[in-house]
Image (cartoon, rainbow, N blue to C red):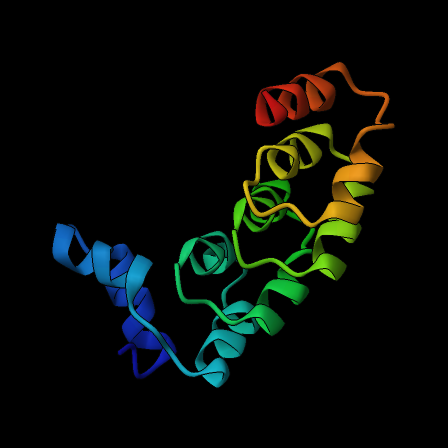
Length: 130
């Protein structure tokens, strides 16, 4: 378990592959994640990448200014319908395309993406639906 924001930074910035793995897979209390995203915007992408990050934190990160952060959130299997619908309206087509390939895409978001005007999004959706 990650016990502080400082520990998360150390793990993520480490050269040791085991530390990097922990940063991507270990759990942390929601307070730690909130501290990370408030204090270190440069770490938001890496927080979003963590496999155990809580949904309330993903809800915040779905509105991040950084397209890479929103893209990572769009790929998360545990996103809620609310998050998916928000990202289905994202101004960046790469975020919508990332959402389109999410295997756990909620039905309402899927329906919304079917009417997207971006060829990139429609191609991703076609790939997902087979």
